[in-house]
Length: 102
Image (cartoon, rainbow, N blue to C red; front, side, top):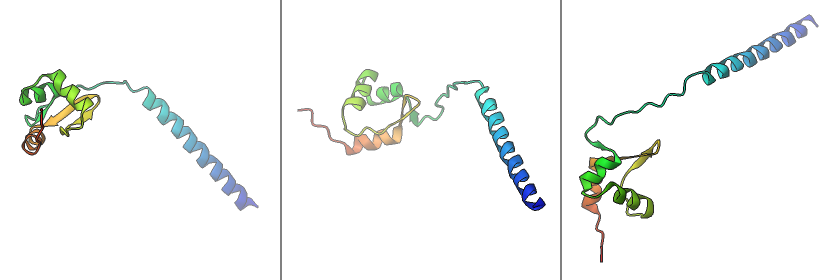
């Protein structure tokens, strides 16, 4: 019987420790400042929406509208609401895409 009591007490202490540790961790995480880090694109092969539009010779508005309303396959990805392009991706897309404007 003594052995069972020790086991129950050990499980209770372990459970309490896990619960207390979780609470402390949650409070610590919530108290961290919410900082938005603005990372500048320093790689010349990575382009913002504005840079990609300039590279393609069109307006930013035109590029954004084209991406949002058509499925012509301009390669990009969106990171935290910002469009990201690569020169290589745009060059390959231009080389392999035929758009009939008529």
